[in-house]
Image (cartoon, rainbow, N blue to C red; front, side, top):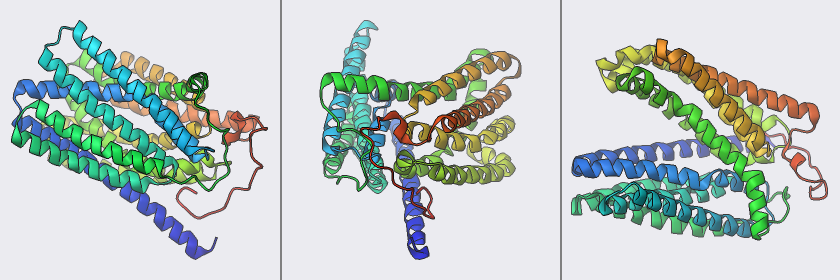
Length: 445
C-alpha cells in the first residue's frame, strides 16, 4: 500500500470514528431533551410512570438481546457464507425474545396489581425500547459489514425524529400515552428502513471463517448455548460490576451520598463515548485479525487518548464540577479525580474484551466479568461503610485493574497454547487456507 492510499485509509477511518462519536452525542442530547420536555409537560404521576416504563424497557431490551447482536456482528465480520440467512434467522430469534419479554412483563404487571392505565402505558414504553433494541441489532449488522456510516446516519435521524415526535405529541396531548405513540412512530419507521438496508448489504469481500448457517431449531439452540450465552453473561456481569457500587453506597451511606457519587460517575461514564466509537469502527478488523496488530493499534489509540483526557480533566475538575452541578457538589471533586484514574483502563479494557469476543474467547470474557464483579463487591463491602464514596471510586479503579490483568493473562495463555486468532474454535476442515495479514498504516487495520 502506498503512502498516499495509507493516508486516505487513515483519514477515512478517523472520519468514521468522528461521525460515530457525533451521532452518539446527538443521540444522547436528544434523549436528554425528551426527558426535559416530558418533565415540563407531563403531570408528576405521568412522569413517574414514564420513568418506570423507560427503566423497565431498557432492562427488557438488554435481556431480550443477551449478546445476540455482538455474536451476529462477529459472524458478519468473519464472512458468513449466507448473510441474508444469518440475518433472517437471528432477527426472527430477536422477535421471539422481544415477544417473550412483553409476555413476561405483562404477567408481572398483573401479579403486582398495576392499574390498567399504568399497565398499558408501561407496556407501550417497553415496546418502544424493544423496537430500539431491534434497531440496535441491525446496527451491529452494519458494524460487522464495516458500514458504521449507516449506523451513525440512522442514529441521528432516529433520535432527532424521536425528539420531534415527542414534542409534537406532547403539544397535541400532554399525556404519557401520546408521548409513547410519538416515540413508537419514530422507532417503527427507523426499524423498517434499517431492516431494508440490512437485507441489501452485499457480502463482504473476504474468505469465510465460518460454516454455512442453518435455520434448524436444534442448530440455533446449540449456537446460542455455545456462542451467545457466554457473551450475554459477560455483558450482564460487566454491567453489574460497573453500577452495583451506586446501590451499595445508597445502602450504607444514604441517598445524598449516592447522588454525589452518581453525578461524577455519570461524567466519567460519558467519556466512554470515544472508545465506543473507535471500537464500533474497529470491530470487523478485530474479528478477522490473525495477529495482535489491529488490537495493538486500537488499544494504543484509546489508551493514549484516555490518558490525555484524564490529564486535562484532572487539572480542571474543580471548575467543571462547579459549572455543571454548582458549589454543593464541590465535595465530590476528589471522587471525580479518583474515577478519572480508571478511565484509561476502562478504554484499554474495552478494546481487550472486544478482541476476546472477536476471537471467540467469550468464555474468558464471561469469567473475567464474573471475577471483576466479585472483586468489586468484596472491596465495596469492606470499605464503603467506613470510607463512603471515596472507597467506591477507588474500588472502581481496582476493578478495572483486575479486568486488565484478567484479559492480559487470557491473551498470554492463548499465545502460549496456539495462535491467538479466531480460527482455533473452528475445525481445520472448515477453515480456509491462511493468508498473510496485510500491513497497513491505519487506525484499526
